[in-house]
Structure formats: structure tokens, C-alpha cells
Length: 231
Image (cartoon, rainbow, N blue to C red; front, side, top):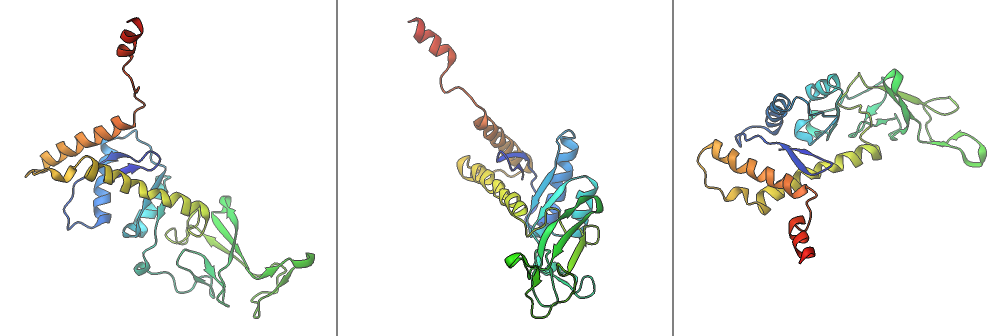
């Protein structure tokens, strides 16, 4: 089920076999939606770790769609980046001393994110490195630039470690609320149909009811109110 995360309302449904992997089911639903609703604009997609595959990021980038996809721990990360840095589970570089680096903005024109040494202190107006084993003699410590094109799966804008990313990704629960309305409130699974066609008929009726519920309908009939006022 594809759902609008701002309204919790369903956009497009697709039935698939239980044996179909979630990532394949999403592709079937997404491209069918694009063919049925060509004018529907998608600017962001919120997906779980089952969809964490490089082709997804490459396609969304070509379509100017921002992906918010949770990382799959089994999918792996490059063991070393920039010769002596590793990448943490949320795409943050880790210095040779084992410290997660501090985010220092995004250079959109150059397509890269900037991270600085987290051990730089500004106490007393004096800039100094508090690390026991500093890896740079620079005044502000070591700086690392993550080029988004190097690995669009790991290096996102906004990055996974940011509040912006987490706030957007939390909206993915909208699909659970929509599914709850369909399955529990409107009793989707009470149907005893044998054909996929009948299941689609039942489901589309439920989806229409969800949208009708969201309309700002008057709580009282205008005609009834007029009659009562005249009486």
C-alpha cells in the first residue's frame, strides 16, 4: 500500500503473493501507480531496510526524489573510506581513533557533506585538539568530505544521523495507521472471496471510505437546519 505520509490516506494499492519480497512488491506497486496516476508528484519516499539496494537510490536520484531508506546491516559498508576512515552504520565517518566525526554542513554546489574532528575544543577562546592521538596538525583538526556520488546509498542529504532525516523517516508509520483503518476498522480481511478481482473490489470500496472520512463534511445537514429554522 502506497500512502501519503502527510494525510495517512492511501494513494495506490497492489496485491501480491506472500512469497514476493517486499522490495519487488514495492516496485510493482510504484510503477503501476506511475502509469495510472501520471500527474501525481512524488518528492520523497520512506521505505524500510528491505528496500536498501543501490538501484533504488540511483533511480530516485534520476527522478529528483529524495529517498529515506533505513540501512540494512547485512548489505555491508565499505571497510575503509579515504584511506584511513571507516563509515558508521548511519553513514557518519569514524576517525582512526574511533570517534564519530561532527557534521559541519552540506556543500550542495559540490555535492558533498562536510565532517570535522569532534575533539576540537573552543574553551576559553582557544582552539585546541583534545584527542590523545590527533591525526592532523590543522588548526580545526581533520576534515572529511563525503561525496554523495561516491555512494548514494550511504551518503544521503540529509544524512541519516541528522534530526531532519529522523523526523522525516518517523512519518513512515502513516502506512501502519492506514493499514489499521483498512484491516480493523473496515474489516478488510472478513471477506471470503476466491478471486483477486473481488478482493480489489472490496479494497477499493474501503479506500473510498477512508477518503470520504477525511473530507470536511458538515456535521449537520444544511437542508435540515433550514427547515428547523423556518419552523
